[in-house]
Length: 225
Image (cartoon, rainbow, N blue to C red; front, top):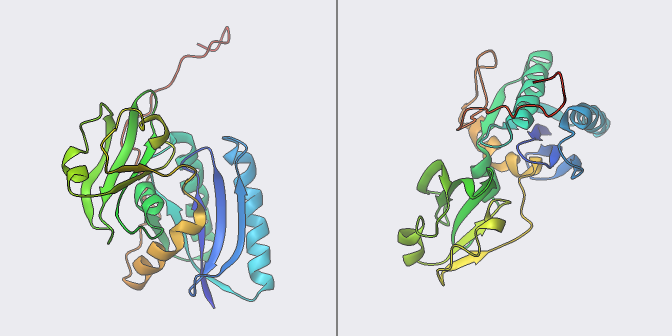
């Protein structure tokens, strides 16, 4: 049975999974130990590829979370995904992080949010059918940004960026659902859809979608500034 190897490294959570066409998770690894993706991701992939081979499944493509999110995490995930595609001669599929975060079925509009320092978040909004209501953007939350969508009905706010917004967004139609983080297995369904439509990336030239330029913080260690 064909499978997709999925990689998600856009937040503090590092995950990799192999998911079959019927939705079965053949193998999965998840770390919530912080941003040690460079140390863990390669080990995770070695382990899940071995498990997949033992189950005689065939990896047909690699799917990766393309951003926005952690600059370093995205670089690690995309670099390894591209290497796998070159090595196995299989296509690369990219799914933006906010779409994959919102993808698990919702019965109402959904607004995924990723933390982007202070009161800024990476965000977008989708209706229950995953049709865009608001484009992907980086915004500082003041409380009025989602008024038009909220006036139209219930909106579920999810992701680690929503945790700091529930005291600011006080509309009665706003529902905050804690504990939802982007995982590699979430990539499978939209990735299979893209694969079926042959919507794959140019492995040589694909880059993560950072949304904002990387800003280096000066080191506090003497001699490294």
